[in-house]
Length: 473
Ligand SMILES: [Zn+2]
Image (cartoon, rainbow, N blue to C red):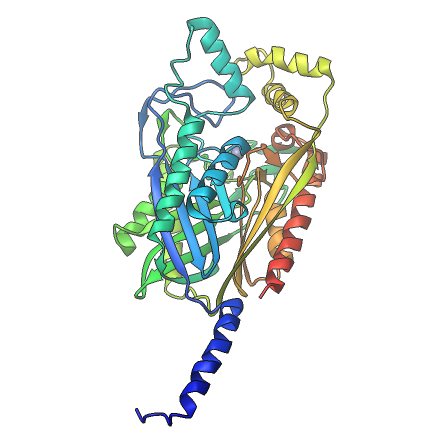
């Protein structure tokens, strides 16, 4: 290399000094990514979530985990944590975010804590848990099915996973995109011959006319590579984690997704799963009568997803110019209102939950009304978080079990080519249906705490935030 004339050298140094601050603002600083997982499997014997009856775990089929990803670029840092539980209530996520922010310096607003919605994990919050717990204490003097304070355990493990992932952060290339996954997801609400809409009306039901809504066939992918080799990634798909049932603790199909991806990419591959907006989407195909429940079904789905993810991996584009940015907003969603008499009647009906005396939807309604009554105000503080990875890709996180139409509307209006939308982040206030679904009725609107229109408010907030972070350079 020819030696530069001495006169030129200061100019080069000077121009570098000028460019450096611009470069960091323009987002060409290298990305660092760290990953970690903490075991959050509760003791066997714990009360299990997922359904409207009391059941206790009898074993562990596969472990429940809290999996963390930390992304860092210069001064900007995010943490995303996905936990293999039905949901994570606001009191747990709030304290976990505060503690993780204090321990790592990652701003609280940049920390996402979500549940994957596994229906084979612990029941540890909400009106039904409170009722079962109090009943156990009244009957036996103590609740043998809560051997640990699971909310505290989960909170500590979430913080530990974020701290470990932050410490692991190292130079990493990030790829992102979306790929179609046919055949696994079905809208579970159907228009019936009599004009009503019914949730899961049963396989080969002759009264089914058509599904009442769409699915989201896209798998959203963010993949991390070091020296060209995939070392981990986030997979987002809108499909209820309710494929297993039974009394063995299990993470549902994401466990098998990870197992298969490790077969393909190596035993140290960290597969993180975030559940898409699947409030009205599950795996049940009503056009045949083959059983679709159990660990085998979870395995079938996990394998299929892994095949699609692995096939897409080679062509998944690296972010050409990563530029991390995040923003969030809290939307006050109006809660449904019930009179003191209605709340008292609902509380009295809790003892009939899981039995045959009270019709199932009335059981659902009783639990819901008590959950509404337990809310501190007349609105639900619903936080929407948006994370930009680059000009091409962003992730949106919403609380609750969000109807698929709402996630699709966000993707449609997003200024980003790839938008991943995850639900059950920050809080688990049950279902977030569309206005249309509230008018149609059936299970999910019955099990919603909010007034019609709340879901559309979340969409509006998410799209505004996406536009905001798209402009930030
Ligand atoms: Zn659900």
